[in-house]
Length: 153
Image (cartoon, rainbow, N blue to C red; front, side, top):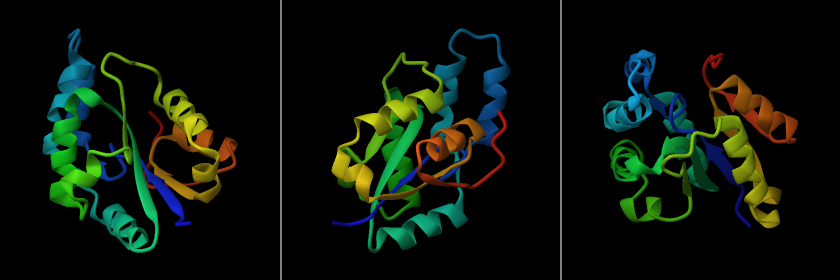
C-alpha cells in the first residue's frame, strides 16, 4: 500500500496574498470574489517540488478550503503548475468545501479526516498546511503536519 500525504492549497501550494484584500471588503460576495480570483495565484515552487518528489512513491491528496464553485479554475491551476493531469484531479484526491459552506477550515478538514477510510488514515504519513489552527488540529489528531508558512490568521 502506498504512503499518503495531504497538501493544503491556498497558502501552501498556491500563494494567494494578492487575494487577501478582497476579504477586507464589506461586500456580501467577498468570499465568492476571493475564490474567483484563485486562477491568478502564484505557485509556491518549494512546496510544489516537495510534493512532486513525494508523488514518485506516494499518493497525494489535496484538502482545500476553497469552495467547489471554483473547482474548474482550481483543476486548471493545478494542471498548469504541477504534474497532475486534469483527469487525475477530477477524482476524489481533490477535496473542496461545498458551495455555500462556511465552516471554519480546521473544523472542515477534521470532518474530512474523520470520514477517511481506516486504511487511508493508516497510510497517512503527514500533512502540509500553513494555517496555525489547521496545523494544531492535525497534530492534535496525531498526524505529523509540516507548517510551510506563518499562519496566524
